[in-house]
Length: 263
Ligand code: G3P
Ligand code: MG
Image 1 (cartoon, helix red, strand yellow):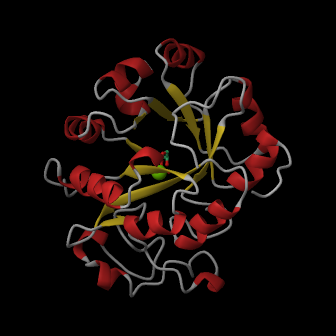
Image 2: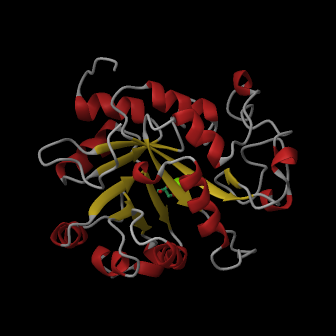
């Protein structure tokens, strides 16, 4: 796969981004969901959520706690990777996924092996703030170790993490995620400007034409989540955004890019 560019080439369809893998058809943020995205022709990027384990390994998990998506309980941050691996991260979705485990970011990058770009979304635990720079450094280390720097976008709702990341790394692509309660009235260029982000990410109901125009004027790419119905996808396509995040990215590919031959 070519190095990541925040915007598709002029005249090309928007990027199709598999939100937490193909999380509509396999348990989110597991290797099963990520493999499905790798195996589906036409998917450009895979979004996944990361946080830290007890020994400060970067793990792929959306929630701060384990109970919604695994057989574990309590805060993921209080378990080592070895302990986390004892929990079943797939049965909640369907019994056939009972072998799925919480993956580390390193494992996922090795599985994907640059066949897709990866959007790493850094999560934060509002009841347990990480020391400044810790998760940022750990994520960068994994990206470097797996030689993934030209194939990633790092995003977060927590813009202070992105500012720190930008101080640590002057060129890694960053994406600011919009929080309507905190950021209402602020234009993409203002939010992205704090950390020199090249991508602005927001929910489908949050995007306005003036936000889109501002992003375009400043050459900032606009990605929208989470579009799971053909009607929503069509509406957003009409606005000419640069990326579409979906739980059913395999279906979106057909709608956005038409039938594709496997490559
Ligand atoms: O990155 C966009 C989207 O993933 C943000 O929301 O809760 O699905 O991680 P969430
Ligand atoms: Mg996410």
